[in-house]
Amino acid sequence: MDLNPYYYSVLILAFFISSFIGNHIHRSINRLNQKYTVTSEKIYEDTNLIKNHLKNRKAEISAMEMKIDSLMEIKDLADKLSSLLSVDEVVKNVAEKTFEIFKGNARVVLYLIDNKNNELNLSYTIKDDNRQTIAMKKGGILDRWVVKNMKNLLVRDIRKDFRFSVDEEEREEDFVSLISKPLVSESNLTGILRVDNSEESVFDQHELRILDIIGELAAVALENAKLYRQTEELAIRDSLTGLYVHRYFMERLEEEVKRALRSSSTFALLMLDIDNFKEFNDKHGHIAGDLALKNIGKILMSKASAGDIVCRYGGEEFAFIILNCTKKKALELAHQIRKEIQESSVLLRRQKKFVTISIGVAMFPADAKLKDDVIMEADKFLYQAKAKGKNTVCSK
Image (spheres, rainbow, N blue to C red):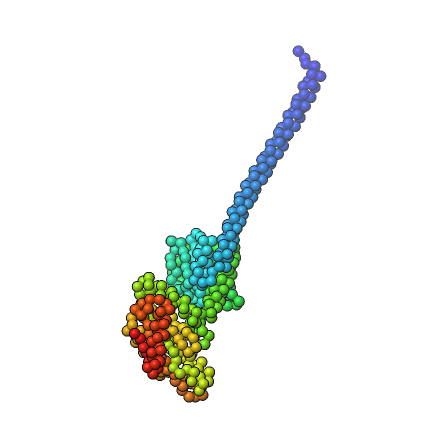
């Protein structure tokens, strides 16, 4: 059967229409797939960015929390240092709080300047159990650099830091990275606060800033403690002779009486008085008298052992507590003092002037068991020495 040409035309038209529609649908699907792919990649990228941002924010928050913790620790240290008036207590608290802040594998070293020898002396160190004890008690090349330049120092890896030529001794020290702060108060270097670690690149500028704040607090606290000690020394020492004053002597005598009673120990009390001192002053003047007093004070201090107390009791009278001593030893020392004063002179207008001294010796608790009684006994023997012609020693 012959088909109608119109039918063919319809079929061809339908074919083209369906092809066009199919192609359009195919391209639409491709575009949607591409758009989906792009959108998926964008979502994935945005998700990663959000995750990284969140991770960074968490790291920043953690770092901020650590900074806040460090600053709170520093505040605690500042509060503590404000109440400390002892150099040893300041050093101990600064070192321990610094170690607490830096933690980990840190080793904290605090040097103080010995003004007499103008050198560093190790004052305090604290470390983790797995770290070695520092061997350089006078500091090393890095510490000397800080002293010379009076600047903070940050070393991330001593093996790669070409600023310093480290010797063999320092290479054997247990550290790789280091931060160090000079302790400076009113342009005076007091010491160095140092934190080191056996691992590289442990410290950065933030850690150095933390140490800088601690060091500033430490420098002020050390200066305050030294000023307090100087003020205290001025309050308890006689300005002319350098010996303790009467008030301090009485406080210490009471302490030594209690200690001797607790420990069943003994001590000797020497009361000393310059013979004819008024006549010496009237004849040679008060300058000569002051020179004589200073000279006797110097002799008495040279005879004192660790713990002994020597004071200017009043005017031309002195008192000397000799701890843990027998009567024989006390009398021997009293005779040595009397003889040395007799033979010692003061130079006035190119002429040598001499004085003598009388001494009374009392033993605690053999001669008296109370503070006032032992003074009375020593005074009694002093008056006996005066009555016997002066320039002599008397005891029970």
